[in-house]
Length: 124
Image 1 (cartoon, rainbow, N blue to C red):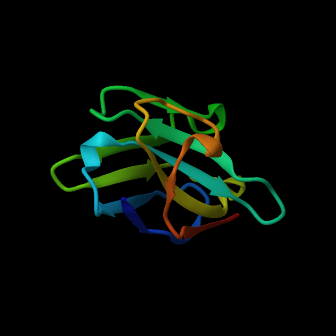
Image 2 (image 1 turned 90 degrees about the vertical axis):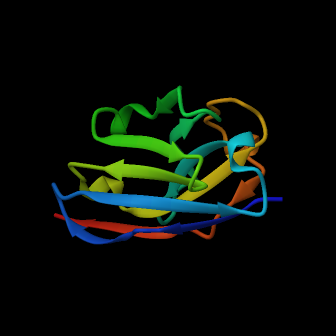
Image 3 (image 1 turned 90 degrees about the horizontal axis):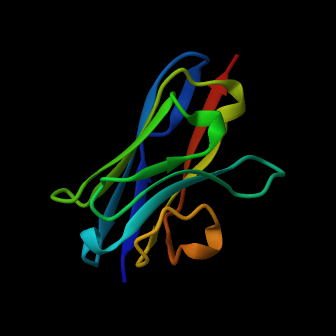
């Protein structure tokens, strides 16, 4: 069973960049497809980006395409989310998720393992 720990969140101004990291332990990292979700206050958890086991394929929600990049380093057991040109509407708790299925799933139900989340706040 894999454990996930996110880091890298913070308070930034609109237009700034942040890089989130998610460190995995307790499993074979390369056996899991990974994703980032986010949840703003009063809203449902929302898919942001996903990456397959090898890192060769990715998927993004339309609102972050061209601004966010998901990547992974299987040697370091870590998945990243590079966030550029941040907007106030990106403010949310960001969660890392893992699934044994080699998919680019957009539904939280497709993921078995979750981190505790990291807060990202973008001020205008």
